Image 1 (cartoon, rainbow, N blue to C red):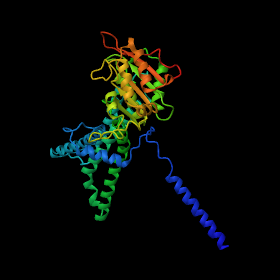
Image 2 (image 1 turned 120 degrees about the vertical axis):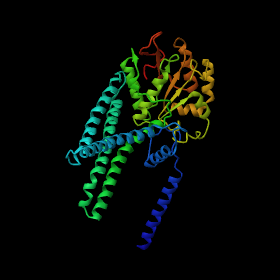
Image 3 (image 1 turned 45 degrees about the horizontal axis):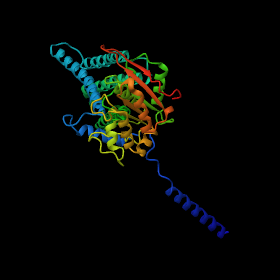
Image 4 (image 1 turned 60 degrees about the vertical axis):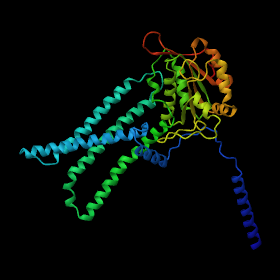
Length: 410
């Protein structure tokens, strides 16, 4: 019997050894595969420390820094309103008006809370008025609404801090020393949680966006695009939502200088970031510099950037002529520049959604598009070609249409 038990245990040990060996010999995770964005509490702490430690006179402020500064300002408004009303009450009592000390700060708190609600509702409506109905604006409207709620919330938190500061002196004498200490600690913890917990959501959003490396923030629903088929806009919306979750697709934006190519591309990347996608913005010149590197160069000292080989969507700007400092001035040159990226880089680009900004003359776009396909290896059925045209001699909405070379099966 003991022999049978020993044999069974020996067999189990051998099986565990085999499992461990298989795990050690398993193929490593694909380093070139698109991955969703992951921002841990440690990442937020790192970004917060960089935002606090660096000076805006030496480095460009980040969106996470701006958000923190905005909310500190909102809390300061609520605090200032309560303290100002408390001071008014003291002045009135100094002139002989017999009023208790609590109504003025309480009234100040109510004024700032109600006033913040109406003010933020007004700014929300003004922002929504700028949204056009070509592209899906669900995410944009939700962000605007949540932003207004967050601003109101932090003003109310600031007002409560002020209210407790001016009226707390009436409460502490009613408690024993130990109870007062516990109450102070509990209130401090409550306010800390009230401030920090909502910040985790918002800082993740800001970090996810700023690590795209975009030159500016632009929401796609604000793009003024005339004579554009809503079905095509829906396909672009689906392109954003499905980045990294479906077979990769690609968009080429064709148009002359100032036709809105970069704005449209930035809008696509912005919406991707706000839809919890990992995106990266590069110029073709920058891509050429880093395409063959095993690791990308260090990011700016106060932020990080998503590696383009991990991103679910990549925007490649300033590809061809018509743009200052563009790389290619002739279709054949574009082909050579794309080939110089190397097959591994082109294969990596084909594995994720990409947006290419072509500054070609719309009357001569066919040659550029053909060289883009040849050089990148993008299949004809995977490429959507959007043509942008700016009205001549007058400001107005950009006219958008599909190029005849676009795939009908995209």
